[in-house]
Image (cartoon, rainbow, N blue to C red; front, top):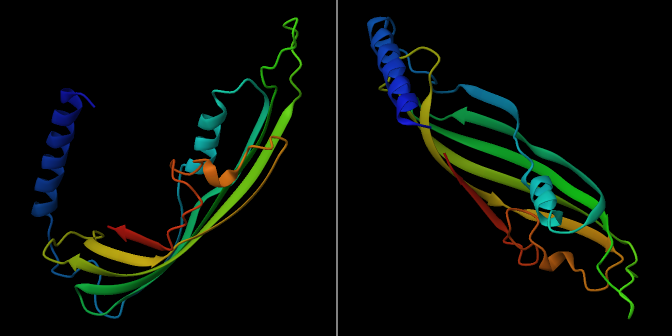
Length: 192
């Protein structure tokens, strides 16, 4: 983003903020005690599929397919007061891929003798989180809920793989955000 875009954004935001302050007619918070919220979300992108493509980009692949589900989540929230709420959330995503490449192997006469190597894998991740959110009710704008929160919960990853390469081990690869799957950290957290 260059400086012209920043100036334009600030100008539009300032004008919008001025109109919002002129049109304030109510003194009701965006969320209030005993309100219930339930929502479903779909995230993007699927980083596991992206990192699989990134991993095989250095190989002379003859075929590549990636699979997966971008993060899907369901959240339930209840307002304990006009400012404080508690929420429960479940998040699932999966990723995987299959690729074939021919390793660069040559005989004594420099004739290629590499046999095609096929590798496939899949991984699934499931998280359950519970959290507290503080809603800022000093901003009296309709349909606006400004909040901050902290969530903590479980983190579980399942994976399986098959490979013609005897040295390939999925545990040694970095397919999800370049973090190894082997030392599965059992806790997840989120700051919002």
